[in-house]
Length: 88
Image 1 (cartoon, helix red, strand yellow):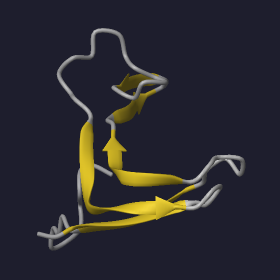
Image 2 (spheres, rainbow, N blue to C red):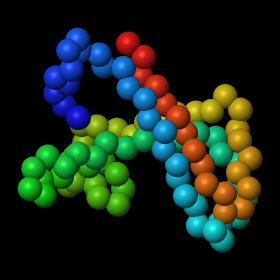
Image 3 (tube, helix red, strand yellow):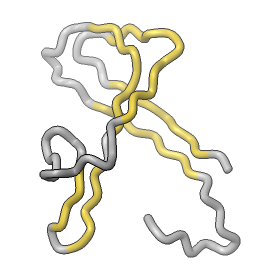
Image 4 (cartoon, rainbow, N blue to C red):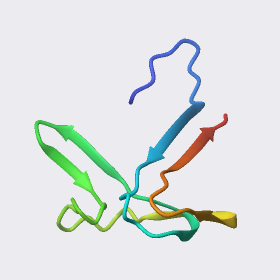
């Protein structure tokens, strides 16, 4: 949410996200997380670099990859949870 009206302003953030996988998905080795920018501005005006909703001529933002130090084995059909902090 922007802008931040907290007093005092603290831009530290925390989120925990769980990604459900198709129960029939096979096991795999996860090397990291991909991140995309997507923003719903106003009344259906969307800016996105996500492959499923990419805005035409949107070339000023690029995906990010958050690598894991050690790849993680993900069992068949298992969900994946990530916790991220922004510390200021």
